[in-house]
Image (cartoon, rainbow, N blue to C red; front, side, top):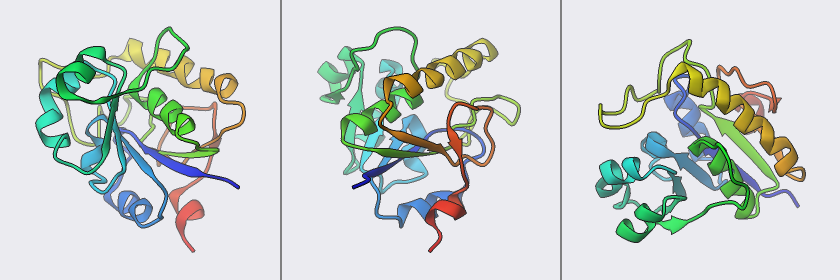
Length: 182
């Protein structure tokens, strides 16, 4: 039996309509970083960086979602659940959210907001405050490698990128309408 999760990242292609569509799907949703605001009924929030938790825990901590990180500091300070895969090396929060879905039993993961390009802007929600990291062009290239590594790391997980706009080529593509309309 296929267990489907949805991961929602911060790419500027993410739309309110897409979020409403998946919110009614019945599938567990992982909001990546500030994207939980686009799907406030998500079951999980994943943010790898301590700086994100330090800035947004007061908001995210008031949700019913399970909170996840790989930051020991965030875990210790805010009581966020620890999820750090055995693989080390470069990573990004969107990649770790997919790995978290697999850890929670997903055999299929659908992605929204995984643009992995800066050609249409930084995030659907705008820039993070100055004290936090915002994507830089050199990071975007590394993200492609980070995501491509999941093909080998998660061979039994079907990953479908349903983002409206994406530069990622390592995953199967679809649209939200094809996946969620009855």
